[in-house]
Length: 553
Image 1 (cartoon, rainbow, N blue to C red):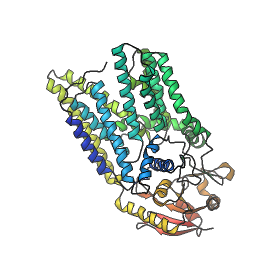
Image 2: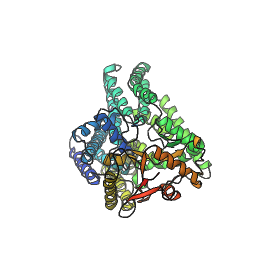
Image 3: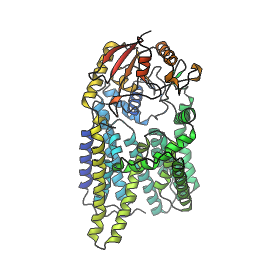
Image 4: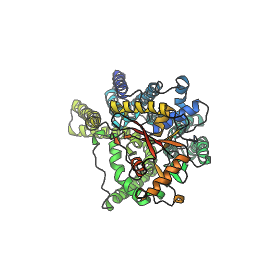
């Protein structure tokens, strides 16, 4: 049964105030005309444009317009009507960003209702926890950009809310839920999957919860329905042709493929499984804490050497997960949150992507807040018999967490211009705008660019772009690890680029550090200097941070 909410109906103004403050903060942080420096946002926007213009679901920014199979289509489909109404960039960007902010505020409001109705929080406590979530630095980074995290969080909260309501109704009526009652769970679970593929973890977790709560029949009905709805997308992605772009034996790093293929490509062809597990084990614990508590921004990762340290952490995490599974299976009525997160956490760990763990673990943060606050409230009750002190101690700690989440990342990160588009140096963005104008003036619509931020230039100039992360295939006879040592590598690559209609190369700043990008394996600068006379400089920004070269035969 749900815990009775404390505090009555008075105090509802508090969540209204929190939402108003957060809305103002998000709009202030939003850069209304800046997009494309994440990578994910350009794929969502080009996919939305593809849907809106009736071209299917395709990567319009790349030559050949391959089908988008890595990113499910629900979020782009929601963005598509905006393309129809306002079809030009950057005029439509503020509307896209305000739409995402609206999703984020809706998610926070639903979290408020969830913890008020089912977890017995007062208005003040619930509003404080919502402010803690809304001020989370990782959340701030996502909610002011065109990213799917706010929609995914909204669907996750909706799924938990619907499950708890179904639980209470079944307890009151003392009957098994029928298909109509389970249908809401099916739709929300599948919507989460069609937003981000990792939402499959929620389907598995909800099936386990339904089986434990209501029996195997209900679980099988739910799981079978979800499979019928989700399998078409899985089948369609597998049915698409190979989407790793090839340039005469060179493979463009696979931005657009299934996660299984990406993981295989990264692990088997580049690193091998043990180094990936070692790296993941060293990052995952600290990244999970950072996803919830932004003031732990400098929390060190576990050292890679000696190797026993990350592998010991891996063994400990595996042991904890097995113990948690034992408890879930042994408990007659496990928590729906615990069931979903049990599948979500290990799947995220295996979903290794360098630096992305905080984003992936963001949906765990609200429930870490709940567990921490429950512990603080219990501790306060043990420390003092005075009711006022029992109330004020956890709220004071909560206020400290909110201040830490807001202030510490800002002090450490904002002066460096890192991580968020709103922190992009104004003169640097002016350089980008100058580059956009130069590209439109100097290139033909059919010319192909070679760039780090490929979707960025398509959105602002309409020019298709090949991603600059490129790997020589075995048929070239070139060694990937030592390719920089041989000028032959660059001659072959230069010829391949020309043959595939790549006419211009961009040397750009690294958005996170404001310095020129230098990919260790194969830098554009080395390519240009290795073959003097083959690259004609046609544009330099004011501080030479952005340079455009024309390829000569």
